[in-house]
Length: 70
Image (cartoon, rainbow, N blue to C red):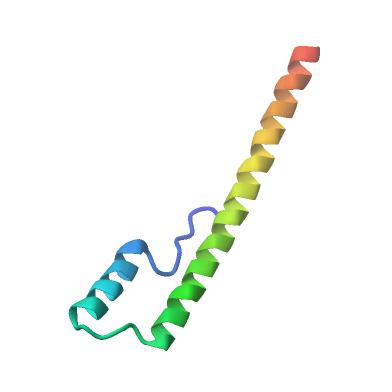
C-alpha cells in the first residue's frame, strides 16, 4: 500500500472540473461516477494507511511501555 498514488490526483480532478465549468456544460453523469469511484478508492486507501499507522503506533507504545517496566 505504501508508495501508491490515487489513480486521479487533485490537479487532474480540478482540471476536469475547470474544463467542464469553462465550457459552461455540466459534468456528465459518467464523469461524476468516475470521480465518485476515485474518491471512494482514495478514501479506502486512506483508511488502510490510517490502520497501518495506528498499528505501528501501538507497537511502538507497547515496546516503550515494556522497556519502562524492565
